[in-house]
Length: 409
Image (cartoon, rainbow, N blue to C red; front, side, top):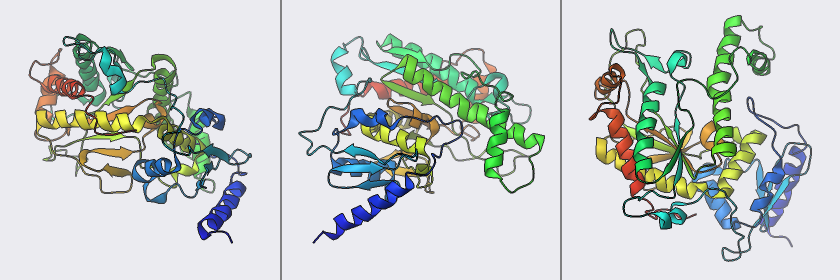
């Protein structure tokens, strides 16, 4: 007689095979990918380790169970492309697992290149200044001012941080590339070129509703430009051209104004970092998202993301005294023992194939931070004792603390 667990797996697999015959469901501007790209990960991970990664970081709370079915020997994954479910075979044991193929290197692999005067030698780090800045700041909602004060643009300020940080890291021996080295987009798309996609998106979202206004379509086209096409273009640059060991996405945080018409500075000031994780059941119904999650899970980047983010946030916290930000909803998962580090599914940290960390220090519209940002915005160069220098130096000090061996693949 079959064991109940195996009988349940048989029923679940039958349901999964039936659902895999449905048409592929893709995210906005998503690209269909071949499931065969996961073939190189066959037998690289045991069943227990596969489940551990799902349940602790990538899909906690069982959000994966509608699209992935496990047997003792393999995971069967819904493809949605009219074919049978994709079969990922497990390693029989950790000792017999095949090596994980990847182009990037871990801190432990890079360490032997370090010297006393070049402690970061061997590292190849990409710095990704968030957002666009320049003339695009107002379009992306990352430009604001308080009264007659200077205009604060996140995209411009984090580009300064990236430039200062690049110099510091290169002085210590690292090779560094900027994903964006000037204000403006990486993508060649524009809001106008994306209007057809915006119209199609609106039609899918409102099949029985009234026709959209020109303002509706323009808003959607703008979103597709700076939030989707731009990130996808940066991902292509990172994955296909730069191919670094690590990407640091540099951002500043902010709190919503209680009264946007009359903005006043707020008290909260905090810090956190994001690694890839916390996929919802709804997100995993998208075929491209599901495949991209599995690539991140299988290539082992989480171990490096967790180690680097722990070291860098510890350094930022020490330099600034900022407390950790705490998520209260289901969009993020806490990392045990690391109050500053959270797992969250963002487009960039999903698409970038190597380890990637989103840094979110400082609340730009807080009483403590705004005067420092205003001083930076009014100066033509980063201030010697200013926030840009502090941010860059703290990140540098965090990287110098690696490898600290906090996490294992």
